[in-house]
Length: 130
Ligand code: MN
Image (cartoon, rainbow, N blue to C red):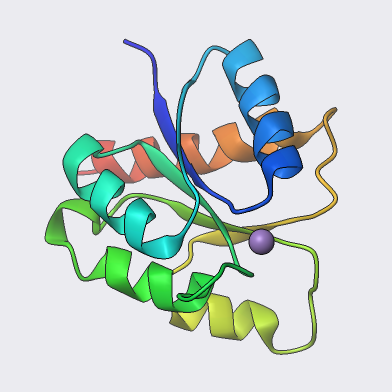
């Protein structure tokens, strides 16, 4: 079965690129344009991984990550921030909000799929531990 990735991203061009790369890599891609829609979709579709933009309208990525983590069904789902600004302290703030990690924009089409698949592999290793 295809692995499902939910992309929460308000920028059409970024979404287009991410979808193109991941579908090419054999993933099923779901998308949401804001945090609220993303939280609802994650709850019903239970993706294998969530890519979450930090700069979103209304509800930012940090708030969205905390809302996703409130759902016990999504407790172990990797949530990866995709963001263009990495300031000192951002990493800590992201981890404290429940993110599993970070991919920096601009997206590099040559390495993006490998970065994403590492997070899925890490989650599967956790699960197989006794
Ligand atoms: Mn954005």
